[in-house]
Length: 137
Image 1 (cartoon, rainbow, N blue to C red):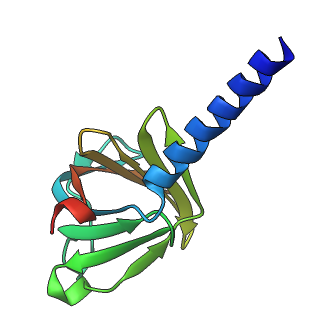
Image 2 (cartoon, one colour):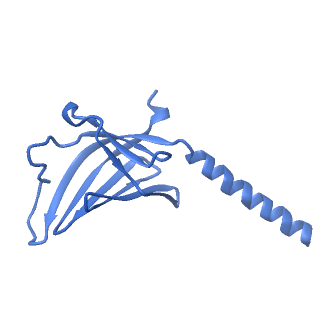
């Protein structure tokens, strides 16, 4: 009985370690396909970027806990630091706070991307696609 329990624990530890290694160093190239903003008064429309261009492509890095803009050129290299990265049922969930805004990103196992930015009185919902960077080569 003790041998069976020990074997089971070792097997579970190996599975957990292997799943962690599968995500180690994981990065995704992400494309934005649509974005919408909802204000506290119920106004729905495109997000207001002021005089800045709307991001179209970015890179997510699980190890560095960073979201780095790749395009447009005027925004290339802007970095958002993320505080946490979790694996939830095979999905990657990133979250953080930047300049008083909550940033959350979910990358599904089939490459769907959902990003939300929550600020005082407004929520931005962004949808797109994510490709593991090692598959893009």
